[in-house]
Length: 452
Image 1 (cartoon, rainbow, N blue to C red):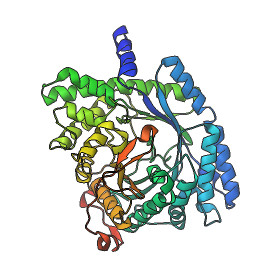
Image 2: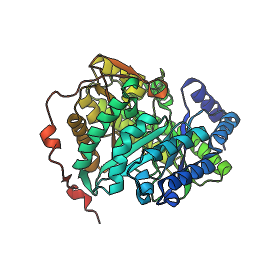
Image 3: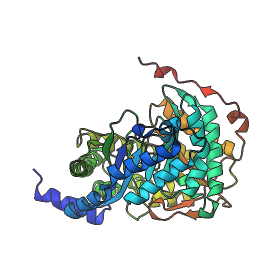
Image 4: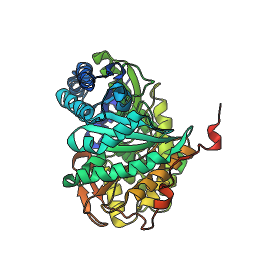
């Protein structure tokens, strides 16, 4: 039974501590939309998305009104388009992205993910066509998000794909230079990508998923921060237990929304993603949670340990609240989307190297990192390779969302607005990695990948 105290606590979390459901994401399989005629395939794709997701926004808004729970985004993820478009007799995949964008606008959703390819072990011709199309696709669409998986613990790292993605990020930035390289904010490079991620820009609907499913991503850094203010100076055992209990309450709300949306849309419930997703709003920051544990500023010594505790405690608390936990689940550290991290980076306390160390223990990786516009494609690729190596060796998902902002230098900032926030330009190493990247080939999987 839910008692009066719990109801009042939830109201306080929503009203004063920025608690919300970050996204309801409908995953839709497009495998049955494949056709040799690309125009026919696009028509099938548009029709299926619009049919499945026509009530997604209205149902989300109904739940918001009835339960008083803010649901910030309503989104769709689809089967990686490199798989769907493979049957089509065309070399140009940009029309597929434009079809996704048109469907998103018709349904009124915030973003649509799945202009994606999985190339951890090698390329198909369709993969190559899709990757080639990414810069133009992201420059000419508003709501389409793209992702490419370049490595996995089982397969190793496809360094040819890593090199190519460095060039793709650079080109995407230049094609959207009028928007400070905004196209790159819709592009994620993964290692160990998951099939049920509800968060953008990396969401896609995996081939192991059903025809249609509802996944929910929760939030709540402000709630955790507030809870830790009640245990100042107490041992880390108490800190961990406090975070676990708070994550449990947050996740129960996510489970409620997911079940309700599933029932009303007559679509199976997939997972709840437990991730603490920050926003640029004051009081909704993962960095401030770490500082509440006793750090003077996020990025100083001890930051990685504090983040490890937070990530683990969130998972432990969340898995007790829902029998279907998935996605990424933990704590996000997107630089431009977290006001505390923006401040830490602007002060020089939080550097790219420290962020990389933090990704060893957080949910994802180097997220929404703005770097100087003259950063070379090889340097971008080398940063991707480092992050992919962390994911590969540690059996975890890692990702890179880099934005080389055209014309910007260290000390400048770029404004993206909304949840994407403000990104300070942070320095990269001035030394070249070009010879390393130009080797190509594949970094082999680690020995401990042989678990069969």
